[in-house]
Image (cartoon, rainbow, N blue to C red):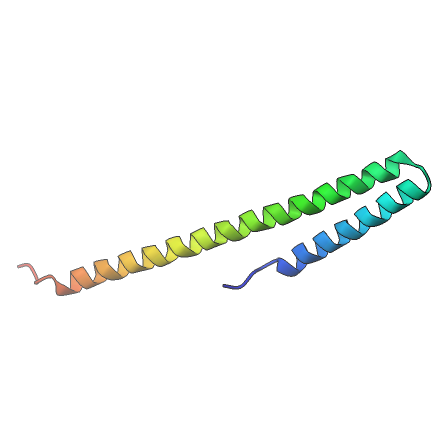
Length: 88
C-alpha cells in the first residue's frame, strides 16, 4: 500500500526536532526559560505528529482490510446469482 503524505510527515518531524534542539540549546546557553520551554513544546509536537501518523496508518490499513472483505462479499453474491437457476 502506498503511503500518501509520508514525506510531509517526515519533514514536519525533522523540522520540529531541529527547532526543539536549537531552542533548548539557546535557552540553556542564554539562560532564557522562554526559549527552553519553546523547545520542549516543539519536542512534544514532534512526538504528537509521530503518534497521529501511526494512527492514520492503522486507519488506512483497517479501511484496506474492510475494502477487501467487501470485495469478497460482492464476488460471492455475484457467484450466487450466476449459479441460481432462472425463475419463470
